[in-house]
Structure formats: C-alpha cells, structure tokens
Image (cartoon, rainbow, N blue to C red; front, side, top):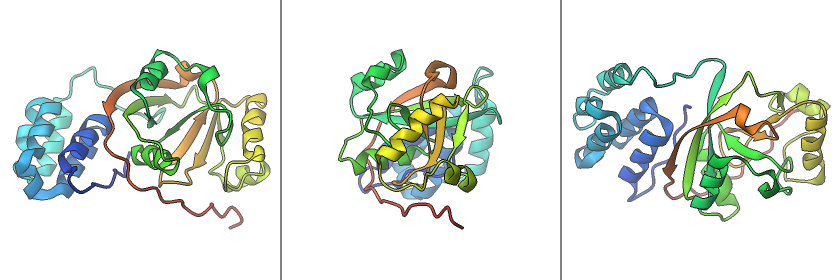
Amino acid sequence: FGATMPLMPGAGLEMLEWEINALGVAEGVAALTRLGATVAKKGGAALLEKSLGTAGSEINAGTKIGSAVTTAESGMSAGTHTATVETETVFHTVTDPRAAQGVLDGVNTAKLNPQSRFGKALYISDDASTTLAELSYHNAAPTQTIRYEMDLTKAKILDLTDPTVAKSWGYDGGPISNATKAIGEQAQQAGYNTIKFQSMRGAGTNYAVLSDFEQVLKPQMVVPTPPAPPSTTLPAPDFKK
C-alpha cells in the first residue's frame, strides 16, 4: 500500500494513529514524516511507540525516520505476516460498527447491495483512502476500516484494469448501469470470484469479491475511521489508447 490518506486540518494525530494502526509500519512512519517535527513533538512519536512498542522511541520529533523503520521492522514479532507476491493488502470501510462485526462474522450475501457496480459483492480497495472517497461520494459517513490480507491464489480475478480484457467484456468505466451489473453475473458464470477495476472516486484499484469470501479474504485488523476526505470523481479510463 503506497498512497496514504490526505491529512485534514485539526485531525493530524488522529489521522496518524489511523495510518499507523490500519496501514502498517512503513505507512505510519511516512505519515509522521509528512506531519513533520511540529506535530511529532505534540504526540506523533508517542502514537508510533504505542502501536509498535519501543520502536517508536527511535523517532525524535520527526527525525531518524530511516532508523525507525529499520528498528520497527526488525522488532516485529515472528508471527507477524509479511505480504508476498501471493497476497495483497486491501481495505473495506463500513458506516456502522454492526456492519463491521457482520463482515467479520462472515459475509451475508443477502445484505449485499444488488445495485452496486457489479451487483452483489464485497467491495474493497488496495488504497484505504479510496474506500473513504467511495463512501463520501454517496454521502455516507465511515466508522470502521477493516484491513484484509487478500489471497491471490484463491482469487479468480477478472482484470478489468487490462484494456484488452475490459474491451472484450464491454466495460469502459462510467456510471453504474444494468450493463455493469450484468458483468458481475456473467463473471460468476464464467468461473470468476473477483473483479478488479479502477476506482472512479479515488486513486486506488478496487476489487469486487463475488463469492468465496472466507477463502479470498482474511481480516487482519479493524480500526476506527477518521473523517473522509472530499470525494473527487475521476474521468473514466480511456481504454481506446
């Protein structure tokens, strides 16, 4: 996960804590770097220390960032999972704590929205900020963000970020329509359990997990979500290039 969520006025430390906890070590340290010495002196180092133990003490008012990353990574327990090429870190943000618990207990397909882009699916993104932008576009307030490990060996992916594939499936982005929803149904009939597509609201790549939820997604952490940034609708991908 590379891009991190824009810091909002008056919410610097809250955002930093979210990035450290939800996004991982390197992103949390990167956030502290962006916040700089002023905010770090006000508690940034303490937040990192709270999340990572003594590793956070290596940060002194926004300095020694490189050594902090090294110390934090070497200090992580042996049981901490390190992503490989067979996995990807992805995120899902909900608007109600009960919804977060419901997702963790097991995806109930009866509660999935059939009016979503590809119909009933669990929608996730490789960019946590994008999950907030998606909700903001629909005037929904986020409450919790769930970080997952996505098992790419179990995900049978229809990759609509590939222009050739997208063209063959008649997909060119744009608004949700009967045609996009039909792709979800057709993909399942063709043996796919996941659709990969570019978000229209943020910089991230999204996935619509259609089935096999417990095999494809392993929840890693749930954290409270800070206020969402304003949503910006991106132009539809130009698949003709």
